[in-house]
Structure formats: C-alpha cells, structure tokens
Length: 151
Image (tube, helix red, strand yellow):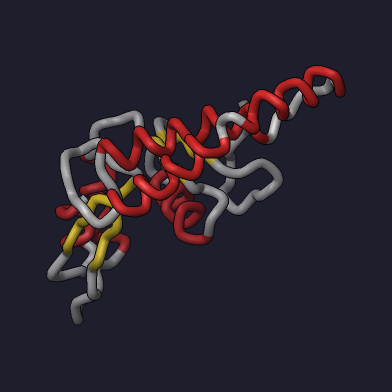
C-alpha cells in the first residue's frame, strides 16, 4: 500500500492500525451478546426467550464495549479492526498512463472492497479496464462500479 500511494504522488505516508487483538476480541464478544440482546428470529416465542436470556449478557456487552474503547488507545500486532492511512498529497500527480504498467504487474486476482463507493468504484473500473481478474465487493443496491454481479 505504501508503494502504491507513493507512486500515486503521496508523500510522508503513515499507516496506523486501529485497535489490537484485545479490541478485536471485545468486538467479537459484543457480536455474540448482540445475537441474544437483539435477536432476529421469526418465531415470536423464540425471540422472546432469546431476549430474556440476553438480559444476562448486557453486563458482559457493556464491559466489552468499555474495554474495547480503552484498548483503542494502544497499538499492537497485525490483528486489528482496520488501518488508517494518513497521506498528504505531494505536488506531482501520477498519470493513469504511468500507473498502467504497475496495474498490469500486480499479482492477481485482485479484490476491491467498497466498490459501491466513489473511490472504490473508480479504482475497480480502472483496474477492470486493464485486467480480467479483478473482483469487487459492494453494498447491495448501490451500483457505481461497472460489471460487478451479485453472488
């Protein structure tokens, strides 16, 4: 990622992990608690029973949320919630023609997440124009990138 941003004209690139393994574990625990606290069951009886059981999970949910927020202040490892990239743009912009050899040389297949967004769609369309092994993930109902099919 640093190399690609550098080639695109960005300088002083800083990549920071958001959270750490403890943050991820807390978010997973919160997801399990949420299944009981806010069930998505079709059966009304089962839904009520899960909510009653979920009352016991509320303290664990709150504790996990507090620990997760505190752990966001500490860095550690590659297991994180995602990355924040800080990259002030340099003076010189790289042209699309200059990036084409780099796009062609990338090992594939290539997966573009967020292909329904403005930047993701533009990236997907640019790479898909040059390569057949590019795939995009987008939110259903949003079609900005050309050629992505629901699977």
